[in-house]
Amino acid sequence: MVGDAAGHEVARTHSAADGHFKVDVAPGTYTVVGLNINSSMLPRPIATTVTVTSGSYASVIVAYDSGIR
Image 1 (spheres, helix red, strand yellow):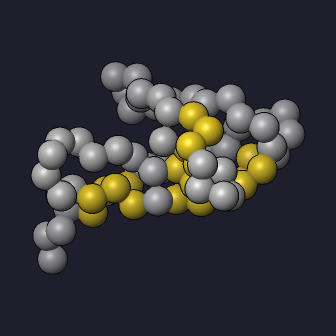
Image 2 (cartoon, rainbow, N blue to C red; image 1 turned 135 degrees about the vertical axis):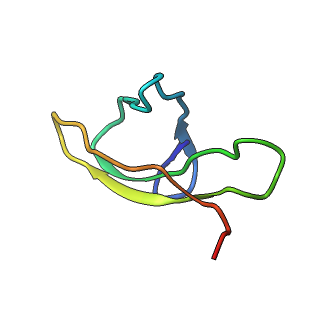
């Protein structure tokens, strides 16, 4: 899920089989967070902030916390 600075969802997508995805958004700062894989609380998705500049894509790694310490 991609959210804007106010926390509103602006895009949602699925990754390809290789894990890559691409979302077209206007330049700005966004929060990217994976969705829960199942109904369990774990693994927990970790939000990542990314800044998109005009005419380009930004790379982001969508991470999850397994809860294992």
